[in-house]
Length: 120
Image (cartoon, rainbow, N blue to C red):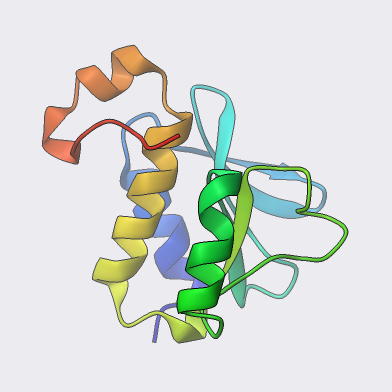
């Protein structure tokens, strides 16, 4: 089972990954921008996700992906239930995609081993 400790370990292993408390919750940042945040009870994370991709992800896997009504509506943000993830490999892929969306281009370019350009 994927845990909040796994989120922290993987997020901080990404280049320039940093943790900062905000709104009483741990957030993970790159270049000063948030790319992930642990939920109130450590059972979910928020990640960057282009607004136009959220509905498709939620429709495809509603047990895994969700929005917090009234909070996420206006942001390029998506929630992920940790218990619905298959394993740490899936968590890493999700965090890496979010990291790529927040990371400065120069940092992404310096790490081609982390995959292609961010979507969105």
